[in-house]
Image (cartoon, rainbow, N blue to C red; front, side):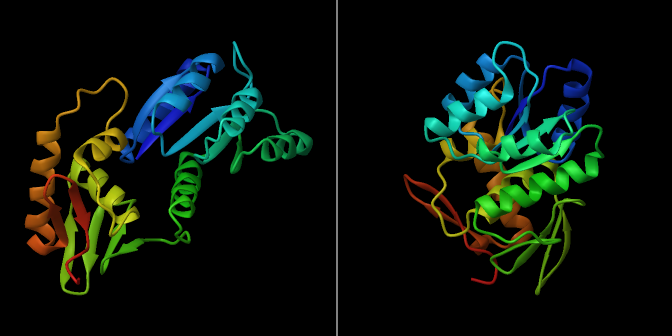
Length: 223
């Protein structure tokens, strides 16, 4: 899953970026609201973390511009402003959630998890369920009725999480790359193919189908 982090506090952005990457997210960081407004419309982000007090263009203005242009990605507002009127203003502008600084990283990650699941039509729960599998995003392990707990590498986890949030859909290599790598990463479709084969070896060959010339479909080992 790919996140746009918009925060002008460099130390906080560095810390958050590290936390998010450890949790399996690809992260692009921008400190200026004008840059964020443009990038948010150009790239297929799964979620944005948006500070309000930004140089160039304020966070609320960025958010309003996104919504006016039909951008529906989930947005979590992150700000030091604690007045309830400002929280209401942010939600009215189109924010999906609101977190006041200072905060605990664990709470931030759980809020992101809940927003992403709702965006894919899922109710928040302790585990992500799809195709007869249960994915623990905290431990980055997967299990199933006929599958013992399986440890996943960082890349396997990112790939499986995205596929489990989109079960039954044909996912091209290009789409998978767009959502698993950040703006600066070199995207190699061969890496996707290798990781698909790694997942098949752990979950069962039939868990991920290949559609020639189209991409891959996650169905799960119980399909």
